[in-house]
Structures are given as C-alpha cells and as structure tokens.
Length: 260
Ligand SMILES: O=C(O)CCC(=O)C(=O)O
Image (cartoon, rainbow, N blue to C red; front, side):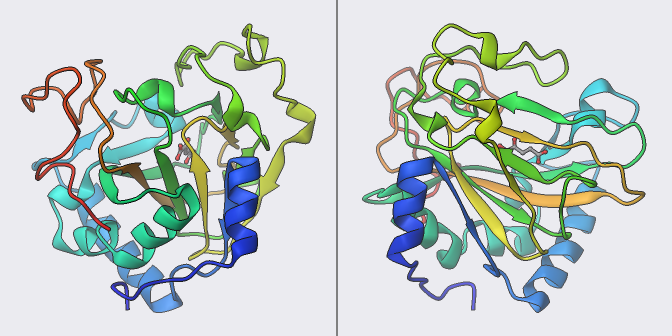
C-alpha cells in the first residue's frame, strides 16, 4: 500500500547523509510500476491542464528531456503516487525533515533517437528557495543502465554551494567553476537500476544522466520534497510564478502540500 509507512535501514540514511544520494531497490512493486506507467502514458499525452510540458518534440530541450512538471495536478492516479506516504516518508527519514512538503513532481522521459545526456548539474540553483536541504526521488519505470539513460552521482558533492545553474541545453562545465574543485569526476557512481527502484539525491549533489541510445523511451518519475518551512527566494520558477508568494514567504498552501 502506497499509504503505508516505510522504515529505512540506518545504513541507507547514513549513506545518504554522507554522500548526498542513495539507491533504494524495489520502492515500488511490479504492480505499482505497471499502474504508474499507465498513469504516466495518460498524463504525458494530455494537451491541456495544469501540468507544464517543458518542450515539444523537435526542440533542443526535448532531446535532453521530455519533461512534464506537476502531473499530480492533472491526474488523480499520479497524485496518489506523488502524495504517497511511503515515498514522502522515505524522503523525510533521509533528509531529516521535521515535516515534509511537496515542491513539485516531474515526469522525466529520455526519448530515443537523437537523445542527449543530461549534463552534470546541481538542482538547487534552479529552485527558488532560501534554504538548502530539498531533495528528489527519481523512480525508474524502466530498467536503466548507461545504454538508455541511467544516472551518475558524485559522492559528497552536496557540500559544494553557491555555484551557477547549468543550462541543460548549452551547459557550461560545472567542474571548471571556482568552488567545484572538491568534486572529483573520477569518483562518479553509475547507478544501474531495475524498474521500481529509485535514487534519492540532495539538491546540491552533482549528477548526470546518459543519453538514451535504446529504441524506447526511458521513463522516470521524480518528486521534489522540501522541509516544511522552506521559504521562497523570489527567483522565477514555473511552480511559483503567479502564485502570490512574496520573497521570504514559506512555500506552503495547496500547491505545496504537507505530506508528512
Ligand atoms: O532524468 C534525467 O535525465 C535527469 C534527472 C535529474 O537531473 C533530476 O532528477 O534531478
């Protein structure tokens, strides 16, 4: 049951806190994976609603990611997974949030044919938050390896702050930034996973995803969690623009629901 609590092994929590990411196998059952794939197929094809698609087929961003943000707002089935206790509970234990809120979900499909890697980047520089600590779960809906777009992470890189955001279409080399010297690309951990398994990563952990050189989409669902009390920085973002939040306001209310 998606609403059941989960208790993570202390070893997983310690690994996450030390390295800024962790792999958890089998967070979803095979039946749940099938159900989620069906919901995703429905929501990705929608041409109306409150979720936002980042780019269309043929666009440069689409070749990196066919992304739809806030699927939960359009599809009750997606909402069941995005709001689920099990996933939010795991995030809370790893990050040590007193209480957890949703920032947003995003379906992340890496399409076959002319697929580009997701360049090395940190997530927090994209997010309009004053505090650090927000993090993502990335759930594989297909088996993933280097051939079809699995992720890589740099252990301990979550300690590195104040870097620029990386443009995913025309990336600069994050490793060449002043302040990134501590991140060692040679220590990158390649995370191959079965469908239904996931990683959690801190918003500051350096990560990358390979291009999809298979002939089928690589499907993933990511959900971004933040500590209750996280405040709005005032920076532009599709999830906070036109919501009435003022700089310094806590990110809360119906669009950023409390999950634990
Ligand atoms: O799915 C991908 O290719 C990249 C995902 C990512 O960067 C993220 O979830 O933060």
